[in-house]
Every structure is written in C-alpha cells, then in structure tokens.
Image 1 (cartoon, helix red, strand yellow):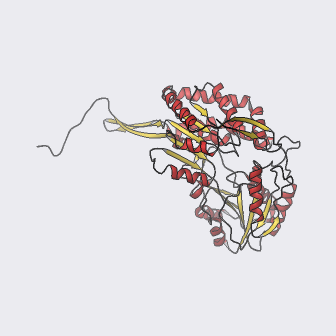
Image 2 (cartoon, helix red, strand yellow; image 1 turned 180 degrees about the vertical axis):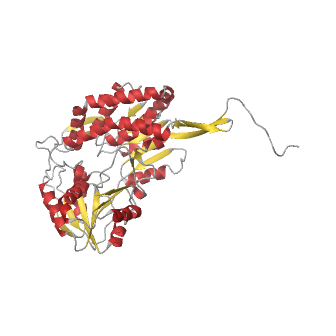
Image 3 (tube, one colour; image 1 turned 45 degrees about the horizontal axis):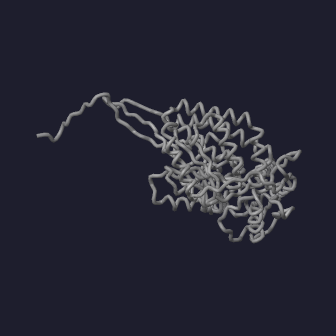
Length: 466
C-alpha cells in the first residue's frame, strides 16, 4: 500500500506520513462501521450526549496542542487556529440543542390515537473534509451525525491528515466505541471510493467541481443522503456609505477578502461599488492592505494571515492574477518562490469579462457600476450563491438587497465571512444542494418517521358494506 506525506507549508517540514486507503480498505472500514452502528444507536441519546460532552472536554484540555498542530499543518496564524479549536468545542452544545429542536420527539392527540414524530439515523455516513478548517468543518458534520446515532467514516483532506488523526484520538479518549468514527486517509481516489462504497450518505465540504461530480455519482442512488457544502464567488456591495464610516468599511472589506489568506468559502471575491463614488474608500482599503502582517503561525507579534495551503495553490493563484484583465490596484506577489506566502491583491475589472470562478486565496476584484439595479445584477451574476453583504445604505436599501440576493448568507454592514454557528450555513447554485449545515446539520443526519399509534386496535367501516 502506497503512502503520502503532509507538510508544513511555511517550512516544508514533514508533519505526517501514512498509508493511502484503497477501495478494499474503504470497504473494510465501512463494513466495520455498519457492524457497530446499531449498538451505538441502541445505547441511547443520553449516552451519546455524554460521549460528545466528554469529547468537548478533551478538546478544551488539549486546546493549545490542537491549535498548534492545525497551525503547523495549514500555516494559519495561531490566534486563528485557537478560534477554530474553541468553535470545535462549542459545536457540541450547539448540536445537542439543534438535535432536540429540529429532530426531537413530538406527540399529540389525534382522536383516539396518538400522532408521533421520531427520527432515525441513516446508518453509516461518510464525511469528506476540507483543508481550510480541517477540524471545525468536518466536526460540523461529525458531531450531529454521531448524536443522531450514525457511525461515521471520515476521509480528511490529504493536506491535513495529522489534524484529523488528533481529532479522532480525542473522540476515542472521550469513550466513543471503536469503529463508530474511523479516519481513512488518501487522495482523490480514496474519496471517490468512499463516496461509492456501501454508505448510507455522504456529507461533503469542498470545491464546486468536486461537489458537482459527487452529485452526478449519487444521481442513481436516491436512497442515500447527500449534503453538499461548496464554495462561493461572493459579492460585497458598497452603497450610500456615510463618509464617517470609511475606516470601518475598509476594515470590513479587508476582513471579508483576506481573512485566512482568502481561504474561506465565504470570503468576498467581488467588491461592487458605485462608479464615481467611494474613491476614498479604495484608498483606505489599499492603505490597510499595506499594513497587513503576513508571516508564519507562531510569529510574535502575530500576523494577520499566513500562507495559502501549499505551493500548488500559490502557483494557481499567481497564474489567475497574471491573466486577469483589468487595472491592478495592488498586485498579488509571492515574496519567496519556494513558499506559498502571498501578498493580498486588488484588481479593478470594470468593463472586462471574468470567468465565474472561485479563486481560493487573497485575490479581490473591484467592479464599478452605474446604478443600484446594475449593482444587484452584478452581485447575482454568478452560478454560486453562498454569501453576500452590503456596506452602507438604510434599512429600506438593505431590505431590497436581502430580497434580491441569491445567497444563503446575506449580511449588512458585516463581513461576508461573518456566520454564526447557531444558524444554518449553506448556499444555492454551485454553493450547495439546499442542505445547509451548522445548526441545520441535524436535518440531514437523521430522517423523520411519522406514526399514528393506539394501545389497541379500534376501527369500523362506516360506508360501503352490504
């Protein structure tokens, strides 16, 4: 069996080495998960909650080591990975509340009978995780799936396998029975093998091309659940902005576009402004961009952003920026050709034709439009529909923006990448398949069973008898 490595993007140091799981290994893991899942469900909700809370405690106890590992494997600053670990722990109680609210048991009188609603687990669920939030995002599937009584097979990104192993070890330390959560590593072929194996559903976070391929793969299996959480080509509109709020708006734009080195699916990719207005805002944005500290995760003082995930990603982004028509306001540069550190870029593409793509990095475009209708049209000129935000305007303007936006997250005077864990998270178009995650993950981790129940049979036929 062949192997692969995980590297520190800042230094090139090998962090992890392991075997690639082939189709036979995937099948064996799924078979084992199917064998142990009934006992996990039969253990009862109280037991599952106790294990989940023990996992939360283990995450909190190992928070520093966990955050440092994520930083080493992704290059994200330590302040950011500490936030990710805290979100991972917080997900437990949020998921318990969501499970009870959205998939809890309900009953009511229906004449002489009782009408009841309960939920059952699907069985064995596969999870395909991304590299940008290698714990928080797969954990957003795993916690509700386990609480619902499913067994889970996780195939993490091949770029962050060490982080996945660390997380699985914390679940084991929390008392999760062997086989209920299993991590299998590998490249794209391993992910395809898991998607095509004898699972009851697949929960995916990743790119639109991969998600579309999974949708095609699942087209012949309607009995299996498929939840797709994909990317976005997200618009950020500035309109009727009060000059007193220029600095706040500039900070919001920079956070929207460049947080996590632009490696968030909710990052702003397209800044849309009124032609002839807001020139001072662009100046403030550029000034703030020039002040951003870019560096390795453990530097003191802490950087705003680290590198993109690897050299291949950096090369793709540099190529995209170099071939993008328009006026370069601030270029995308790569200070060290051997490492994936990039400086944030801003390019005015007004009047040019742009492919509708998600450039997953610190690359923001500016489009100038003549009026509000053109601004809305520009914002919605995408096959994606994850996140959108408006800076400026009054309540009536925002209400119109909200009503006309094609996005699952619509914010006002907040960053595009501001999303709450206790709310649903997802989009439309190439951003998702109407199965939002976060608080609504409970919906796709269990299926409803409606019942009419009576202690004894009681029926008559009132019409049609001879």
